[in-house]
Length: 204
Image 1: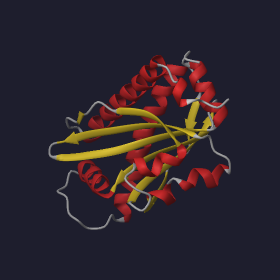
Image 2: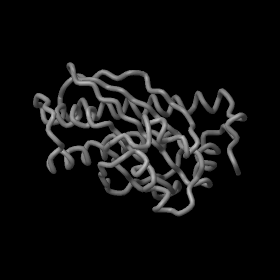
Image 3: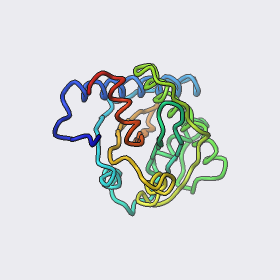
């Protein structure tokens, strides 16, 4: 089945927005518990994009970003990626380590911390999706890459050879004190899995 963007009805968009809201809320709660501080969250923007448009959604294909990448297994097969720009990645590590920021490159310890927090955030979204759909979904251990956006998003295509052509895009912003983090979550199921998600949500 090819999902026609023109046929996406308001019910589907509302359901996917609800998924983004619940997942972002759970992710923010998990982060607040981890650092034992109040974390504010903006209402997430949720869209369905063509895979070819993902790099533009990140700014441009040559922009350096930090990608935290997982494989999805179980009833749903595909990838999930949490992508941060460099400023947001530094702020996220500073929040986690309760330190003041600087402009130094990310250290190995910083990248390890990003991997752990990415794991927590992605698991929050996947748990929300699993609860909403009743589907059994697991994620692999995270892999972190620092590269141009175009290279980062090529990972799923290389991994599977043939990808689904639609991506669920959840744009999230949260803030602790004066540190703001903008993160983009991309849920990239294989074509059959995307159809299974929409069937489980009762919208197709």
